[in-house]
Length: 324
Image (cartoon, rainbow, N blue to C red; front, side, top):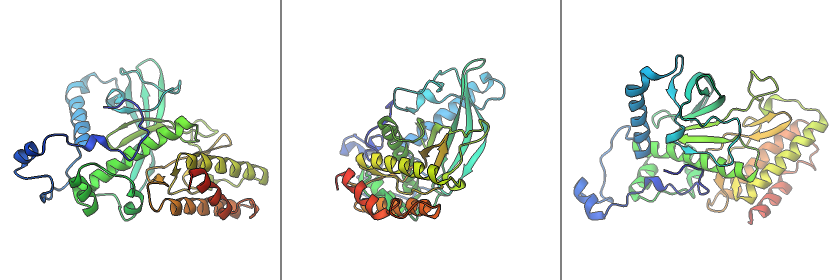
């Protein structure tokens, strides 16, 4: 298992099967390309392994947990965020996690507040983003975003295309893998995104972005009514962020004032499971143009001059930065 972020979020190597074709045929009584029976709720291998670890912890460690905590730290079993790691992050395997409540519910994932602490020692508060199971998620928008993302086994590709229970679970895991890898890549490049702490199955642990009040989360851009000078500064920050994304060949894919936070006067872009490779995805330039149109419209509605927030000019600038 990798212990760091991957630079290629379209390569899902943990879903491959390198066993000889004849051995696979003997195990299942057929070849990979033969039709497979539908199995309701079938899990990916990675998710099955994660759930097995959770069960083991429940049986063997429940009595040892510090009072009031919910589980031991999963840091040692997860894909870990990029180095150098922030000083505030607790990586001690003796730490335990405690659920503090729900931050946000959504169509595709729920976000919880979680404290990771060493008993009597260091602690940190994290955002735990948990993708919903295949039976509860909406997939009407998946097809366009998944262009350019591939798994190596034809059976998985068919299952994803047919939206079987197995396929939906694969897609859910792809969202988590893609978001974690993209955040790792963007954070390393200096983009304004939350630090990706770890990925364990379909759960992401992310930096919790506090507001000016340490007891509350950073506000969404949509909640603010900044004066003209602050609005212009926030727009320039947004342009810089989008240029950095484009220089890496990426577009946010669903950018708006609702998935942009403002912490201490600085923008932070969040919610990136649908991040788009503007080169590999045939619709990449259209996704990028839509991002620009959405966010430019919000800024113009708050008083940004139209010549400053011209979406056509910015889109052309970003396509050039992406090498298109």
